[in-house]
Image 1: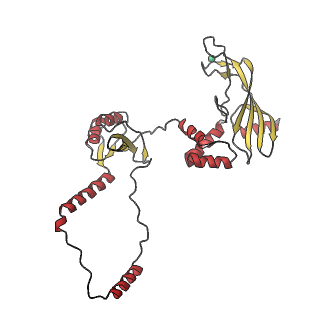
Image 2: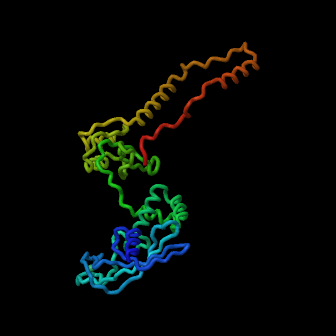
Image 3: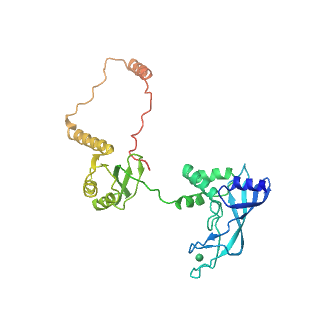
Length: 298
Ligand SMILES: [Zn+2]
């Protein structure tokens, strides 16, 4: 019995279950467990009941142990809901830390697969799970991610804002970005000043707004967060500078001098040899030229 208690604590920490049988094969570990809870709450009305109607046999998949997969044969209680106004006459108990309604895998395995998908994405996560003797596919992993609640952004003292093309030249959204973490905070349905101002009123912690020169963002910031400082976004500054330089250069194109011609007194063979020498003796850059860093991260 002591061995069974230790196995239950090792495999199912925090779950009030008792291990009845443990069968080891080369392919899997089969664990037969039963609940030890004296009562459980009805999922419909929340009233607790200890009146047992019958027992349900459930088969669950758990995290693999030392290679082989783990299959759990759970004997759960089906209880009678004694609340006469409740629509559920009977219900199957859920064991905290182990089971969830309609789920065929334990909560610890669900957490493991969710973390793998968040770190690796769905397809590599499915490949790794196969190596870990967990049967799943990329679509299942994507469903796990979609069931996660949306993360709460918390306070955003320094906010970046820009437009985002849902359909280029036709439909645009607004993306507020936390400039401290460089992460997307929300997606607004359009790029109007009213929408942006409404969003700012719901997030009163904004102190600095980094934005482009679009008038809608200026008006939205003034209306929604009048006490926040507005700063020009570095990407838009560089973009506007490049456009201005190009425009001025085009305007004065006729006044630009032609490049100097190469000296004509050098024999062609000697000039080619000199060019070859220049190329080989020219110091090479220590780092490769990279593109401009993105100003936000999704
Ligand atoms: Zn009920």
